[in-house]
Image (cartoon, rainbow, N blue to C red):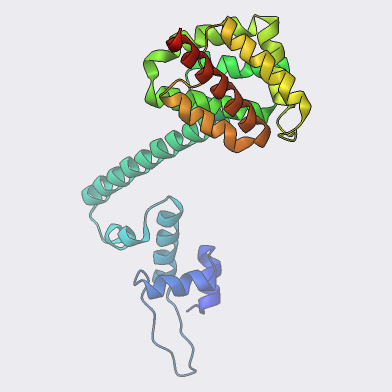
Length: 245
């Protein structure tokens, strides 16, 4: 006859585990003997080893009791079912791992490769991650609200980064992020940006998702907020003048 400590050691588990199996009804708990101790038989040791083996194989505790008392055909069928369930969980975890790997890539989860290439190109040009995050958000908004515009915008972006003046303005805007809104350097930058928009026939006050983009950029920097407001005001003045002529 075995004490609970000896029984646990025989099966390679802890006393706490044995008591847990008692609690869930997997292993009967013997009555105490005259000395007040619980004594376990060799059959209890065999049963405990079988329980531990099934549990270690991934069989849920709730199903072990039925397996311990199943006939060979029933046992094989039940094991096949458990194996199929484990495979399903493995497939699910593999899918989770794939998604986690995509999340590690950040923008690759949300944007097509052509846009990710543009963001990587901005990094190569030395544009800050802060500005690149805003660019990423702008593309996410475009994809959601105006996906048909993306191919043309991708071509425009790549052409812009082939142009030294456009690249200079991107870098200048990036550097101005923490400037005071009244910094006189902003006046020159606003003039340069406005001239660029006139040359490229761009309109700072266009409707649609660009309003959300402008709002997102304004939130990031008071200096950028002033730039956008000034460009929109000048564009409005040009439209007004055009209507009056």
